[in-house]
Image 1 (cartoon, rainbow, N blue to C red):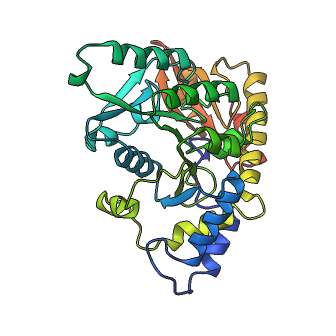
Image 2 (cartoon, helix red, strand yellow):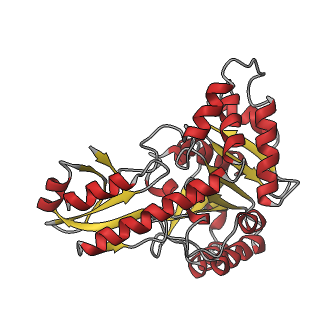
Length: 341
């Protein structure tokens, strides 16, 4: 079965796996205090062009979202997110489980609009009863979004300015950040993101790592005793080397960016195939995720040879499905899809 189900269907990129194997017998201190974690942190700071950034590693995206949000919010605060944001729809209530509400805003192609954010904050503080309400304490966005769409630099700057005016942090979920940064249509760089966001994370799980995300606090704003809080939430890996070695490899010789560029190149070829077969796009994204509308019978037939993700029901006879590329996508995979269609 050829799979376009997601961008983490394979294990680790061969270069990452090679380093894990070659360092396997080294004895290293635990909990992220080893030399590889320190080296990876320094390389990430350099890539962000931000010497003072605090970098910490977490095992996965859900843990990153839940730990960052819960440690940066006061107990009476919630996090603002688009209604299609990952924390709004696909985190199984992980944020609410920490005691913080997700305050949802409308979305446009997966993105939060600055005008909606401004209006929400203005209305909140204009409400005479706001002391009895959940305070907006953080803004969450993802880049790319759940729909594979991207914020422009101008959109990010406007959202960041609103956050600054209300003294609340801007948090960017970068689970698929590598694909956003290498999109042919983006005008945002990693240093731009580091400059505009108060905290973000660089996704490894979906961009070549076996597992792991790198949280980057950009304004000397890492919560005090952060590692203690990570452990208290059950998200601290004793063998922190696993994360350090992977990110040290990903940020050596631009591997992270090469992986992103390769997946984008494969996605562009994927789009060509989908267009050639005249499949209607639900959303033609500039990143590695593509969304098409299939007639239900066509979807069932295709699923016998090709694996893909259900996205949402379009109508009674059609379904939106997602196909994703990654470092492990091959030309042979694309040829198999072309033939199956």
